[in-house]
Length: 427
Image (tube, rainbow, N blue to C red):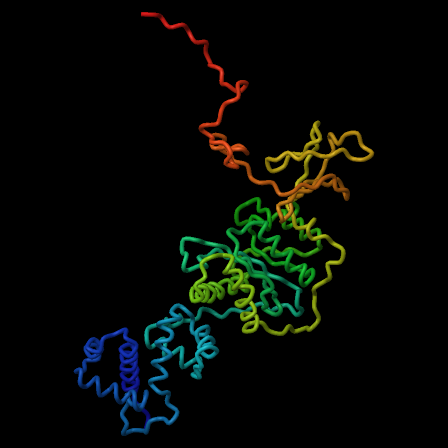
């Protein structure tokens, strides 16, 4: 004979309240008030639940308890483990870590229901209308996704926000690159693309949003202008990679889901590992998180052939850089980024005045000046100069040899009065 619906609902309510009391979230006197029991009656219900499990909350005259019931001690251990060490993890993430590191043998669905009944996890909302997902590409390297996700990745330093730059393969769901940067800039994007291309080769296409580094958009939320290329667009056009813009977050759902998964898992793992710096977080990403993520979520492509193409003799250092056109001045100098670069005398040419050259600022911070395929000069990284001249410090003062206030003034640098001094009248 089956149980009525009222019996099932009452048993579920009693189990939920007892689990909260077992984990310490509710006091036993408060639990007795919620159920309408006396403390003595609730103590008997607790003993029945510990002895017979969920079936002990039902009428035992109707059927015998299940021999496959889970011991209450194991349920209590799992709930306390989540509450004390892994609060904030989602059910799937916690279940994987609990099985791998704490020898928990319970199923995922049971652990999820136990955490929901204990009030430690929220129940999922109802699904919306039916949607159809775009089929992934067939070959590895046929389409890559790159996106930046600003977030408070270091939970132990909530005031510090960084951006996660991640590159995802569409066919295998494999993360090819992931690193935290202070901000989402063209320099960070170029560094990510250069590492992926140097490791795997040239992909067929790249799918991005319409950020300032990706496309030039004349009108806000309008179509992109592919005739006016950005620095990243110029590099991709030079390599022959098709650059595809996305016009909605739903269009790049795979990268959005990747960011959501990283925000859900990486933040908690960095907190448990007590990581407080971006350098340590990037090391954790590279050595532990990304390999484990690829082992758990990546899949085999429909076509085993790879779509990546060898880079050949292309020099990625000359492609992934900030490039601008300049004209050489009369003194054979080229100005760029507020700095003047002096060109040496070129063989076979008396002067470089008036030549139209290309200035490249490389990812390492170095500069090089080119005219066609010929390099006219190479310059090391330039340090930023102090913008406030009142606080500028000279080389001797910076070295600590002379005090800025007590330094003697040269006679030729003595400031002259703005107006001639008039003789004072004698008293």
